Each structure stands twice: as structure tokens, then as C-alpha cells.
Image 1 (cartoon, rainbow, N blue to C red):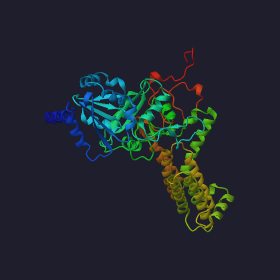
Image 2 (image 1 turned 45 degrees about the horizontal axis):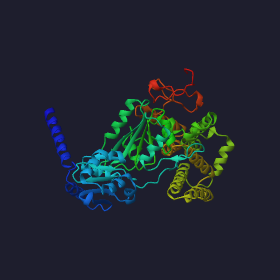
Image 3 (image 1 turned 135 degrees about the vertical axis):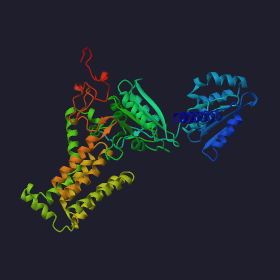
Image 4 (image 1 turned 30 degrees about the horizontal axis):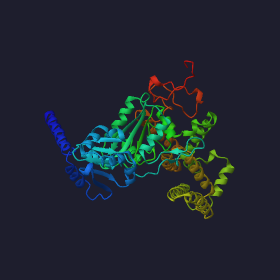
Length: 515
């Protein structure tokens, strides 16, 4: 059986080698052109431009490029354009000699020996240049596909810090990271994922900080699946995360280059995906989702206070509706009598049960939130504010809901909005309905059961070998110090978190001292 497998494997290698030989670039330009025109048939956006260069126009050449990605003006004004103009005046022998010896020094040019590689290079937005009598093609970098450029981060607003955000171009995004980390120990490895899309994906890490086990596991995850195309980093995240059925994200996402750099310096790995303005940071953990990038730009007292506020807000956004139902339906004795009478008076005339009433209003606010996101521009904000006020007020006046329920739902919505990461907040918005049902039908016992299930699930989550609830649970790695709710003063933050290697655990030292 093993011999049969080895024979089959050797046969596949031989077949691949034969296919490679068939697509090798020929010194005969006509053969290359025939292959390209067959391969690119009915691709009207791809231009195949034949030309004749040299003295008396004796040398046949071919330029292949995507019309929008490489304009004629770029070809005229670039170094390769000047080289082509130079070819008009020299002999064919001089052209061959110049291309073989000098082509790589005049511009961002790479020699290719395979026609499939040439087509792939052209599809990335570059131009490919063929010369008759020369068995290689030259890939010439162009301006690339149209993109929106560097923009302000929309989902992670800050009062202090950089306003730059990632764009749709993966090359621009890695350049924004390199702008902040000007160190050759910052490594950028490229992968092309997607059998048809060939989406460029980059893995960024600090060579002397990252654990090799983590890096190898990330590379294995990226190479273990085949798919037609990756259109966004969100698809990549879903395919490579440990527990795919969990509502809690195991990758941290960010639109901010400074946040990505901060995590790279902690020893984490950052993944950039072409056509996606978000970076994936891994491993992810509960505490990192509750941090904002500007926490390190403010004084530690205020940053610690804001972190505590976020933790209280996420608890309120998750438990408050279910706790309200548990109290008014099963445990009214724990509230003062005047408050109970106030609740009863507010609910007078409401035709629905308290559970249906609360679910109805929660879903109404979810509709308002979704409408505000989908409606373009400032009109979306207006719809969110006006819709909430109008629907809430109209529902109270029509005796469909009580005023206290409107207040509960509003506090819940505000609590979820304080979480810096929208994907993480969305998980708690879903869990909220579980607590609502448990509290409404089981009382306080249901709330305790819900807390037990959620904490148990979070404690069992692992992101690339790191427990999700670090630093609130015991960790295997002894080096480093991972912060919790309290933000340590910057001058006392001497150790890197546990993600960085043991030998690089020292982050901050005072000059002239050993500590």
C-alpha cells in the first residue's frame, strides 16, 4: 500500500513537472502570444499590445496588462517606458544584451520563466513584457488596482492618537505598519489564498518576539484549506479559528495601524488580507477586546477608570434585561415596596407579558440599529436617534410597553456600544436574549445558570494555544505580565505580556541601569 502511494505521488510530481514544461516561456514570441490570447480570450479589460522595436523595427515585443491597473501614461513616464523608447534606437543584439544584464536595475522589474506566473503577475495589477528571442518575461510594477487610499478609522474612534486607518490595499496597510516599526526584525510573509481569487495575504510579526510554535500554527492554518476565493478577512477568520461555532470572536480585529503595531510589539501575529481594511490580531483574548488603542495615550488613572466602566457596561448589556424580568416575575421581595408599586403602575394597561414586552422592544431597537448602519451618511445617525425616540414614545403612549422597559432597553444598548470592538459586542447582544429567556422563566436561578454556562464556555475557548480568559485564569507561560482591568503606569510596564518570548520579556529599562 505504501509503495502504491509512493508510486502515485511520484506520478503526480512527474505530471506537474510536464505541465510546468508546457507553460515555460519560449524564446519564440509567437508561441507565447498564442498561449496568452487563448488563455485571455473574451477578457476585454486585458490588453495585449504587440510592438516592434530596435533599428528598422526588427525586434517583436509584447506588452500584456490590465487597462485600468497600468495606464498608457504610466508606461510613457516610467523607467520601463524610457527603456522601451531607448530600444527604438539600438540594434537587436544590443536589446538582448541590455535585457539580460540591466533590466533588473532600471525599475521594479522581476524576470519570470513560466507563462502561468506571467499571467498571475499581470492579474495582480502589473505589466508583463515579452521580447522575441528571449525565454523570459519581465514583470513591471504598475500603479495597481484602484483603491480608496488611507482613510480615518470609522469603527475605532479616538480622542487622542493617530487618525490613520487601514485601506483596502494590503501593500498600503503593511506600509503603514512599517512606517511605525522601522526595524528589519519586522517580517512580512506573503501567501496567496483562493484557487480563483489568489487573494494576497500577509503575515506580520516581530522575528525575535514571536513564539515559533504560534507562528507555525498560523502558517499551517492558512495552508490547510482550499477555497474559490477570499474576499475579506472575515472569511479568513471563520475558516481558521479554533471553535467555529462560538459567537465570541477568537481573532481581534482593528482598523488602526497603531493598534496592530502595539500588538506586534507584544509578541502577537497580525494578518493583513487584500481588499479588507481590517487587520486580524492573534491570539485573541477577552481582555484585549475590552481595551482601546488610546488607553496607552491617556494617563493610567483615567484609562483604568474607563476600562472598569466598560466591564460594568458589558455586564449590564448582557444581564440587565434578564435580571429585570427575574425580579418583577419571581423575586419582587428584594425590591422596596414603593419601587414595586411604581413598576406595577407603569405596567398597568400593557396587554403583553413582561417577557414578550421586553423582547418586542429589544428587537425594535435592533431594527433601528441595523437601519442606521445601512442608511448612508449622516442620515443613518438621524434615523437611529429619531427612530428610537419616536418608537419608544409611541409605544409607551399606546400602552404597548411600559416606560421602565424603554429605560432598560436604552441602558442595554448604551452598554453594548461602549465596547471598543463591534464584533465582540455583537456576541453579547446575542447572549443577552439567552439571559432574557432564562431570567423570565427561571428567575435568579436562570441568571446564575446563564452566567455559569457563559463563563464555562469562555474558559474553554483557546486561541492558538492561549486561554481566552487570560489573565483572569492560570496561564502556562510564566514569563511576562498580562494586564487585567487595571492599567499599569507606563513607567512601571517593564515586562512584555506572555505572548512574547522568555528571553525578550524586558520591555522597558532605564538607561544606565540594569532594571
